Image (cartoon, rainbow, N blue to C red):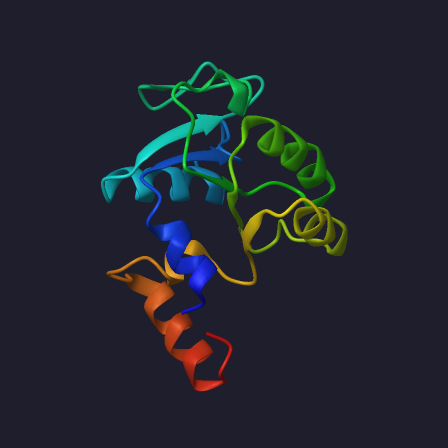
Length: 146
């Protein structure tokens, strides 16, 4: 596993951009899975008060003390603006969930010295890997993408 991905998984306090009112959205699944695995997780959504029983934050700057990492699971067109807030907060570890990546966001992150994990679903890298993510990881290892 790439060093940046393993460093991100060592973060204990993680902000999650991309939680939603819809339980069908992947951001909610990631939020709940991180929480169930013992991470201290902070959902960020500009218009939601809470997810489950956890308060939502409007931005990363509201979280005290600061988080160790930020997982981003939003449309690629929104990522650069989020990264600007992440930089202001002083956080360096970012995971761009599959589907959130763009060349602009990756270049912006690189230009600003962020440690960015991309090109992979976080659930495929967190041990123990469960369900479909286990099969997905096996395939990626087979084709040497993992």
